[in-house]
Length: 124
Image (tube, rainbow, N blue to C red; front, side, top):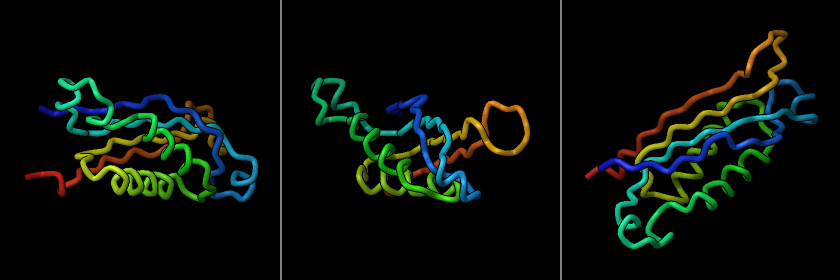
């Protein structure tokens, strides 16, 4: 069985951007996460200790998004690294970070990055 924890549409005001002004003023970002995690035990136990607590995941995402960075790629890398260290049982992470108002002179719904990580260490 494959199981996932989802956090979708997390909104943050963050200071990420190549331009110095972006790191001062900030912008609106939306984060979506799909985390592969073995929660079969929690399905039986009904105990949060047997699953990935999404409130704890949110705290990590919020902390990473609060750090100024030049690139979304850097923020994405920090996020998957910190989640993987905090929760070694994570088997995969699908992450999307979108900047809602990118300063590129075009009407758009955003610009961003997607990352798909497979944790080979969780495979038997």
